[in-house]
Image (cartoon, rainbow, N blue to C red; front, side):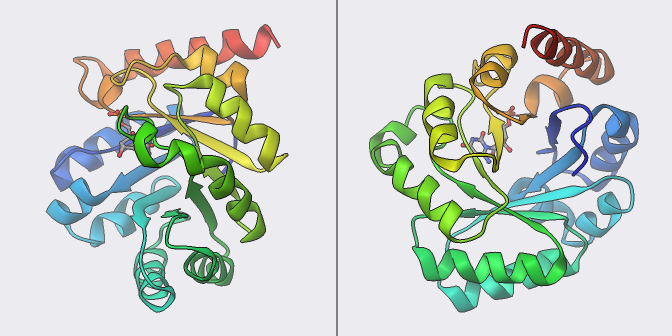
Length: 219
Ligand code: NUP
């Protein structure tokens, strides 16, 4: 992933045509397009192949199974053209290493969820986030997912993972601030509804780019 815009589009629309239209419109404003269950379940795995011919794709399947099943999931989505996968840490090291090994064999990146961005993540995930961040490093991940809704948690996770990447959802629709997440140590912001749900997605993307630029200048 080329860190040009520091922005990843979360493309949680439900139709192939809408997904491809938005991808074409927005490809120059985002470093990658993240697709997950909503789009893949509606449009089929072929959408990964189609979008990956236009932009790098992160498959957000939050993979969370046994090592063998994790491998089968990774092979399917990386084989369809994804450049990166997202996995959960909580099934443990062997499950995560299965994802890391598969990603490596495809020359792809693995991002590991530490603490999610929604309020409920404070219940079970937050108390274990430090350990999950450590496990991500030990397992050979490229980076982690950390919450833009809680910049202080990005800071804490950064102190554990060193120079691994942080991709950070929660800006916009979930209330997180782009500038605060970047200042706290996020490398990329993941943004969905506030862009694809807006009347003018390109204008929204440009507004985000301006916020990224402002944050870079104040560093
Ligand atoms: O902790 C997480 N929070 C989160 O919102 C981990 C994620 N992967 N996501 C995803 O990021 C979520 O599933 C959605 O695809 C995107 C955020 O989209 P939005 O809230 O900006 O619409």
